[in-house]
Length: 392
Ligand SMILES: *Cc1c(COP(=O)(O)O)cnc(C)c1O
Image (cartoon, rainbow, N blue to C red):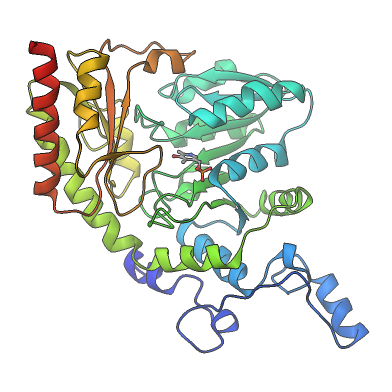
């Protein structure tokens, strides 16, 4: 099945849809049984998509898990109430006191914060590594290294990692390879073809696609799935069927949304690359992006999220640019239908294993589904305000 056809069909099995187009919203804590035999059957099969108790899932969550597994691959998908919960539960499912974790230096900030606080308290040591380290990661692997965590492209700065090179070395040392695959969104990067063991997404972003639900997923290989599933269950992870229904609805338009996000973002990035205020474009599809060659080799597309670095400016000029935006509103998220902008004046403070080479602020854009010419006009006016402050 081709990708766009898969997106339409994923998870829509008749046992979940009961013959209508969409899976039903099954709200449940209690599942009731008429006979001891039925109850025993449900109990014996509670890990295998048989309704047993609400926390183990209902037909809605089974449909969503199936959909994500069909999109990303792997043997199964655990669901969490946020992307952050997916990251922390995936790590906690495989790590124990005394273990060592390798975390990419460009990880999502709350991922770092989790390593630097809770994992420290649990007696797990984290070493941050350069996203472009590739097979060189072998030098950082210790006898107690258990998990190697990747995020590609990196948060804010978009470095694309050599996933297969890292995974190969990791597996030689019996490490579990986890990837924050939120940017790939389950359609632009197939994690299990490149040696990933656990692929995590903030489904909050492109899967939901409408900025109205918090949701996380972790899909895993046959080998890792039982441990991920059972440990996430032990930690009590479950999600509202209404939220899952909205996520399933989001999936159906993922293909067309992504094509438009990608097309518009490339046009905006191309326009920006010709602005005299711009130092560099950090978009995986641009040759200027660190690890661009790995994006070209491993990904089948891009989306609406990228960054650029300014070659001049100060906080006042950046504020003037950001404050007057009509379409690019400021927000910490991305992946919805709407455009967003984020100004970051201190990337260097967020990195410990690598040196940030730029002096001036970074701006991250999420290019939404508005008409792209309106978006470019919005940015053009932003640069006018920016330059006015610098010239005054
Ligand atoms: C947003 C985001 C997360 C966290 O997702 P939440 O649902 O907001 O908890 C994790 N990783 C990346 C790359 C993200 O952008």
